[in-house]
Image (cartoon, rainbow, N blue to C red; front, side):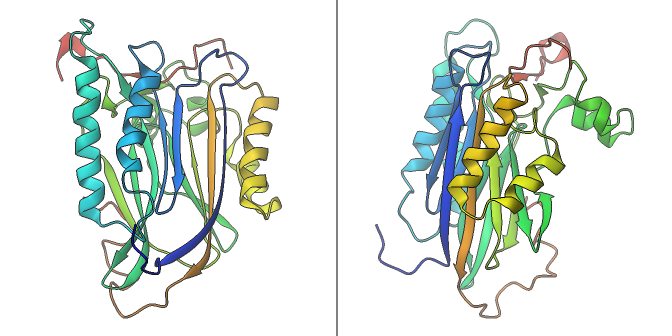
Length: 284
């Protein structure tokens, strides 16, 4: 563990619950600077809970460092992918174990502090800054593709029977690459990382209201999960809330208008489990 001063000093809180309809919590999370990550195992498939725990275990080897590099994150995703693939060997169903992954790590570039976000699947990462809530991650899901193409409205997507079908994952028959974003960190930033069980019950305005109302990170995480339970709790629910309490002063590294900043670096009874999209004809 390095004794170097971290580029971002944080306070954080975490809460997770299997929900009201699940006996097993297939969500796993890591809340240990410089990493704040959520993995949602694919329900209905082999060892979804083991897959999510395996991915988090791989990233946990970095806990305690002041910051991580983009290369560190890429390497961890690659190692996690190989370990989850090993879980699926011999599954015989063509899909096997799988999990989403979303969150941020504290990153330093040319001496400056950044949030480095990563996403695969439909777990989400948000940023609250100056009172405005922004979803950093982009859902890798069938309904998001339909929204992007103009074939489905966001309101209709919340009720669509395909809303839990994801198009990218670690394992689960997917070999798609993760999305990465590099975002300048600012004092007062509040990051929310959550599994899809949270936005599945709470709309954006409700999430925003809780993040604004609860000053303490742990209180905010606990209340978000509690509110989602009150609204139905149909899926596993996990929320991490991370507050930037101090950020190293800028040293003239990457400018905030750099094109690589803030952009990609590279009610029915439908079952609420996250599941991968099965390609037509069995292709990849």
